[in-house]
Image (cartoon, rainbow, N blue to C red; front, side, top):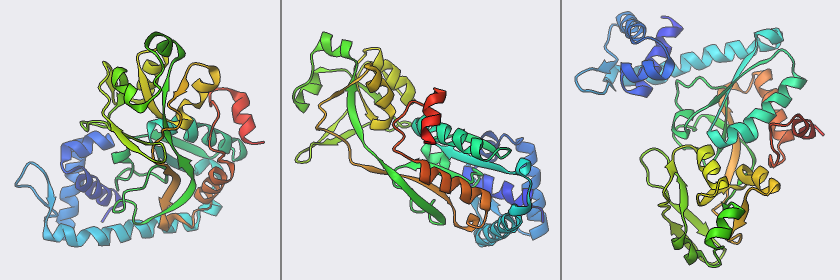
Length: 313
């Protein structure tokens, strides 16, 4: 039984079809199909029901799943046990996060880590939140700003870094042309730029400590990319709702100002998560320890070398 065949089983199970598994992994569909057939041949049982459009586990597949997970964990623990003897150049850590945290947290902290650990290679990956916790994502750790999904993160250790809160922002020029909202009800007269998640209609849930409102942004621009939404707001197309850290650079530069500053979202945790069976990997532990000790709320603009240097002060 080959590890690649077991990994193919996980990829297909997570994706629900060979085509989707091939798209996500970049592995040809024919290769995944061959690996699955070889695994089923060795086991002498079909692992997936192929009757419908979506592949689902057979009874044999459901029995095999937790045992296969144990096999993979055992192999990873074996690799981690000898990781101290590995040369730095042979160490690769894969870090995953979502778009807003990628530039404002993962990027600068990872670059600062590499300066102190020369030779260790990092693979920095930005995913949609729904894809971060896939079993076939192959990530060593995840930077996440929210409550992790309980089922997907049940075998992960979460190290709390801080919290995130979102507020309303607009460009000074937009407010000069359209007026500054004084009451939360004034927002009905403004363009609200949304950042939707897939087909889900966006909602902004905000509170001033006493009252709570839910806003449905319906501006002339909508996007599924947080950076595009911020560019639109900076250029004066409307009011946006962003995590405080995500707008900090533009606020400092005068490109954005807070709107109705007493109103904010609920605070969500920011954590770094890694599989519990990876606790013995010294390189992963060093990365987690570094990020935890250097996390300062990441209120800095990460493109300038001087800001990265300030991180290490």
